[in-house]
Amino acid sequence: MHEKCGVVGVSLADRAAARPLYYSLYALQHRGQESAGIVTHDGFQQHSQVEMGLVGDVFDEDDLANLNGENGVGHVRYPTAGSVDSCCAQPFSVSFKSGSLALAHNGNLVNADEIGDELADLGHAFTSDGDTEVIAHDLARNLLEEDLVRAVKRTMDRIHGSYSLTIMHDETVLGVRDPEGNRPLVIGELDDGYVLASESAAIDTLDGELVRDVKPGELVVLHQDGSGYDSYQLFDRDRTAHCFFEHVYFARPDSVIDDELVYEVRRNLGRKLWEEQGVETDVVMPVPDSGRAFASGYAEAAQEDGADVEFAEGLMKNRYVGRTFIMPTQDERERAVRLKLNPIKSTIEGKTVTIIDDSIVRGTTSTQLVDLIRDAGAEGVHVRIGAPAIVAPCYMGIDMATREELIASDKSPTEIRDEIGADSLSYISIDAVAEAIGRSRADLCLGCVTGEYPYDIDGEATDRDVTRPSIGNARAEAND
Image 1 (cartoon, rainbow, N blue to C red):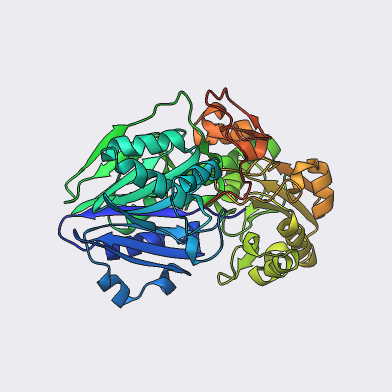
Image 2 (cartoon, one colour):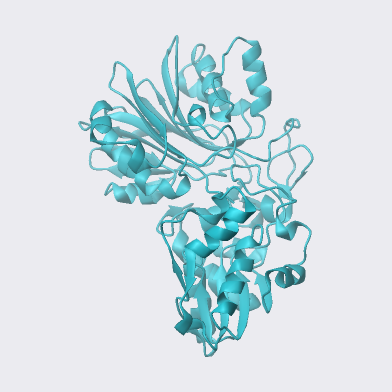
């Protein structure tokens, strides 16, 4: 499973936008490490710096000084559709008869190929194979005939799937969230302007105040002078499709998403995991860093129930090794686990241990972890997972592997337990996840744990009545 992209947009009164955008992208770096980019507008022209690499590698002082203008958008990318090269790095810029566009996208369209083919037939030339360029070309075409709000609405009418977008049309910055609200997007107020970002942690970095989430189906247009914003509710759906995995794994624990502090949701998930699947052991320890909040809630609930259990750190993380999912080959993934985590023997030796993690995808990491802990002298190793079993791919912007690669797609928890070598293995229930997030199951995207999706995707079941026509062949790779 790979993290998704991060987007940001700012409009300020009398201050260059480049540095606040740069800080915001640093705050969102966990959402993508392949490329980073900033596009600003000074009232006359666009200025752009978009390259492969981490935020700290892509920008230096001179770059920021050359990104003139008080309005701009930024992006960090983890690629899940389109090529892993600079042609798909964002924000994506396009100039046309009615001005210029810069577009940053987090999500994935399930009908991008269909729209791209239609636009190509109309003479649009594409420079990438990503779906962000499809959105940019479609919006540019509509802006030739409509005002900004109507043009955005017409594009939203055509594109289907998940998306949170920050867009700059000339020097006007706007944000759009898909009608089901699958990807997060928030509004923040600064002393001298406003910011749109994937997560509130970016607003905190700028000493801003979180105003609220952008609503599903809403267009927010920031005033060019930083004085405020206008809101247009372009679409209303009976149900949302918030990605539950934002709360479980992707988002920073200090972010507020859809009115919920991610850290508290994870703590609550840990408590519910104990209530549903608790096993009494000497030690409860997290898989760092994503398992920490779950393990804290789990251990606290266990202690409240009278269990004689210690919460302790038993695995030391090397922070200079990338996430294991991102390693391209199985051998590299296995090596990365040994590079990444080292057991603390005094926590483990001669004790029964429960390790808490956020998910099991392929099973590689879990097998390695159980082996590590047994080698360190544990008398028993129990595994508890803060998400339900992942049984199906994601089409909404997460590179979650194919069904063939997902260990839970064709194995029961008992079979997975045996494969990873644990004494016991349990997952949290879907109902507990919905309760911890504070949403009904009907308002969450649970496709990867149910196999039923909130969008109409060829060859897949849907969990709701889809009124629009079927959408062509979706690509399981998905986009940013």
